[in-house]
Image 1 (cartoon, rainbow over the protein chains, first blue to last red):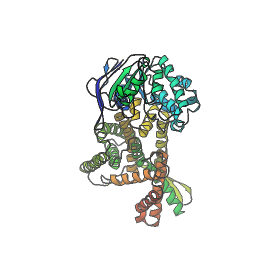
Image 2: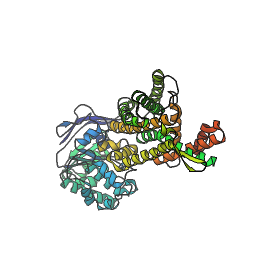
Image 3: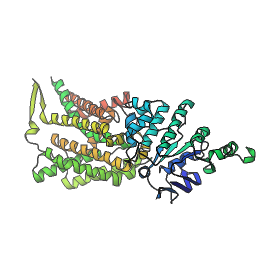
Image 4: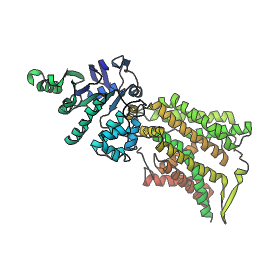
Length: 235
Length: 288
């Protein structure tokens, strides 16, 4: 479904991604893990067109996405839950969700379905989005992305800054979303959380993919080494 | 009674100032963009209406049917073709480009219409008035302008808070990057904001031309009044802009009551006092 080949990307003048290769098959849940500054967020921004990319390094469902503007990429069926949630402060919870439907793609997801998955949002639908707790805001951000009925949902650091019990709540939504047929990529610093939902994992380090495989086929040592950039014999 | 009269006339004048200011407020709110040529576009609308009435003999109010949509379309095109290219991290290019536009527009109008002072003749409407109480009468035209200003702001609020386009405009005002992830093309959203602003500019220009004399050079002063109304009212709040316009109008009329030479000065002094005490304006909704 998504193929990234030999992708370079820049964060300002600084090269943040070096020849990244990865693929995502339809129906999979993929985890991308890595420490701060490993290039995960730049990869997400590049996939969604917020950071420019060139050539035909990003292909999605047979279309070349590299070089396309962000609004066209969303319409092609790729949605993102951005790092830091990025709700619109002057919009209510319901308006934040409704604006997610703006790309106008048909599908299963609508207001009722998002409220069924996160009932607390229905109770607070008229509150300002940013007046909610961190966990509830994260639910709005996930719901907003789903409202565009994406084929591929990118979740950037959805556990960041949340209490462990809230993270557990949020992560119970991932299998539900997957069950509806949406392919998911989660980007995480929290390795355990990411591995618990992932079919395959990519570990990134200093802008490169340092390890990839199925969670059950990788040893703890291999993951730690790839995550922190240690040589295997040191780990 | 003279003072009450000055205040009431000031409130009505404030409606016209609010019309000047609404477009400026809207463009700043959505894209943090200050259009230095805003006042000159108001005068362009005035001359467009003047030309139409001279050529066809139509009533000044009727010219709005043509002038408002034409200006809205021109605003859309101007934003997409020129102004969007000036937007970015640097705040200077939009200021310089619209300043240049202001100079060019004034000179084009001077070439086309000479420096003569004009006025749109609106017949009986111009002089019609009714007496409220002894010593206080209200002109029908100033009242009409005020009511239209209220109606315009009410309608814009409905658009912003009740439609999908309004939601996108507010979201764009909040966060120009994240809104792209909602499938919004910023270039198009910005141009829609400018089109709506230009529609209101047309209404402001036609009413200005019906209420007072105008010539190609008076745009910048209208920009100044619009600025003051927006800043007094607080950024991002259209009802605040109306309040700002009213306060400015009342201050000017009180100044004129003391001495006719004080009219404009008093408006500026009130503006100065307000930004000294509340730099964010009276009813701000967004941060600069």
